[in-house]
Image (cartoon, rainbow, N blue to C red):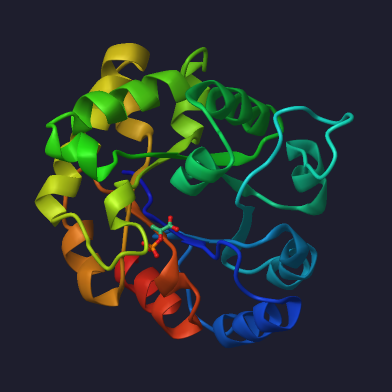
Length: 251
Ligand code: PEP
């Protein structure tokens, strides 16, 4: 049984004060940690107070990026070692916005994934096709290649610890959601890629999330699909009420 994950991605939203208000609104919620892994991926500056507040609670705090080196002359960067030291447990790697605006490549995604795993962090590796690629019928090839590259050189145990987020670029922040069947078909192709490259046990254990305009109104149908193990959520994770509704739907 794969435990579903609901991971919020706050992107570049919320001040420390706003993050604290969000925390006050969610902290009293009853979350069954046997049934759902609830994660909030916040901007770096909000991580110290969130980690402290969430300590011992049902919620995990994640970052949205990290550098692959442990330390060094990389001005403005944050390493996985620093995140681990703070008490962060998850980290989003290779979000399409980072691939698009910050030149992240399959190679850097692979290096960051390995570095995160070496630190004991859970990477949430993002893959997904553009609208042009979908219209050209290339979705499964593009996504499978991204997964193969991101997971290159990982042990079976490391594969199982890694979470994949399938996020079609055209569905992120646009209000357009892939149909649950289409999303499941791509998640199934991802699992087949993992099966071919890393074996049955790893493929069956790895959580694959869907992301792209997920909200309380569409989560239930997505979660009925066999190969969808939860969601990576941007906009709807910014409000405590809708974030909690998503967590509730998954448990
Ligand atoms: C995301 O930020 O990964 C995302 C899927 O955003 P949204 O839910 O707003 O589409």
